[in-house]
Image 1 (cartoon, helix red, strand yellow):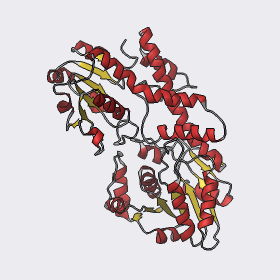
Image 2: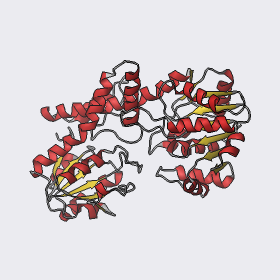
Image 3: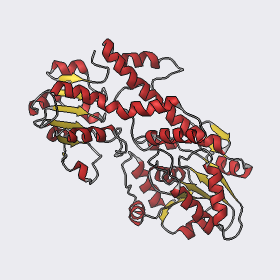
Image 4: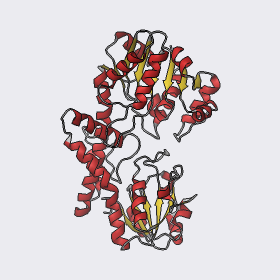
Length: 431
């Protein structure tokens, strides 16, 4: 079987890599000439640890090819994975325009039976819409199946998750499609769930929404811990030992961000509303996350009086470590508010950078943490990059104007930071 991956972003590039690594012949298709040329040279257009090396390996071996030729690619491949983006519209619903365009292209250029697999995160019922879009675009009738095969990749851990998945979900009503997909995944040692397309689509949304709920729950609990002078990390440890709860996603902080959780939660809420169902818990999860960054900012404001003409150093821009993704990152909201209050903002992130946008023009992007904190009245840590914990803060404190440290990820040792002279505040972990 020859596999075509349409869309070579984060999901598409990772999917192409993992099938090439499994021994299949894979082609990546994208309309972006510059992106395709970089991939042909074995280079990624985004940061993901370990992925570029594997892409380069399979490009060199000839097992992984990249093209912009829709007609040849669609006609020449047996299985086609749709991996294009599904951004949220302003109302929070999923924008399926790219999915629809790909479906139309497949219908137009197909020359025989094709198995079309939706890997992108899509609302319940999208498999049926893709089927209709392909049929409408066909120039002559050809048999095809459309299956759902959602991805469960963590940014920063995509290679590990792709090569050693904890489950494979296949949503299809076709025995032929089921057989082909099981063959495709035959080398993977993990549970396989064979279900309906609608169920597979909902599994993806339900999984991410549940994890987002755990995060917002702990962020709410951290505020109560502050009032009682209880360390939320100790509470999380005690909770996480219960196997029904588990330790993952119990870390209080500034809230979730990135390309998945914010989008998927809002799209699930909108999907429910379209069915006259209100997911009240998830609506509150979104509200808690929207305002969580301001909780730490309020602490800093109380300490400093106000931010006008204060030098504020932001450490970390990406929504999480090991990625350059700043979509919905709490740091961007933090910076926006600081600028509105006339603060002087300096920023350092090991990988991520601000977009070339006028609203960020007053921010000084620095090449090191040392440069960012020089003459700072306060440091606000927004991303838990390991490098920040490893800094010699005893030595670095001499660079600062005032020794105020606000830890948005509860990363630092509060006792140690205070011992070396810092005024330290985290989120529910100061005790």
